[in-house]
Image 1 (tube, rainbow, N blue to C red):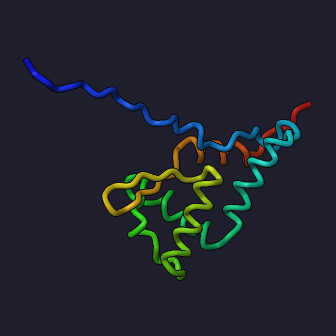
Image 2 (cartoon, rainbow, N blue to C red):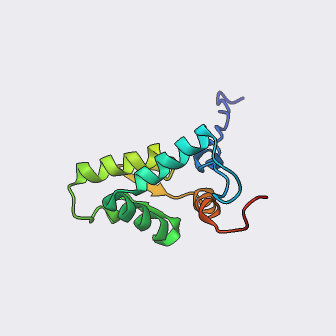
Image 3 (spheres, rainbow, N blue to C red):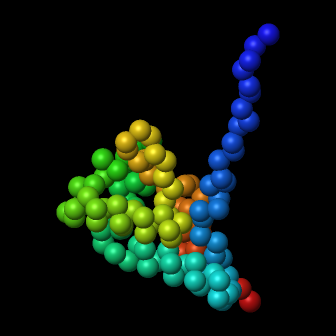
Length: 125
């Protein structure tokens, strides 16, 4: 007889929760909550260093990047960490710690939502 216990699996939080939730601009006017969400996203991307970091993560091989691979953006490491934190708070990045390094990724749902938000289509009648 064994004294081992089986530990339950912990399911990760759904990635879709990180996606901006706004309709296309041409569909209808934003609600106050939708405008707040979109503004937070655009504000985070409005800084050139943050935009470079977001682009570096999004375009990195494998869809994720270690902070050690993307920190060469002309600012100090603490400043890189600050900007990555702001991108996470805006729902644009997710992260996972592996040992001493943190890996960042842009969830596909985030890029899809951003593309949908800015897609040009016929305005609602």
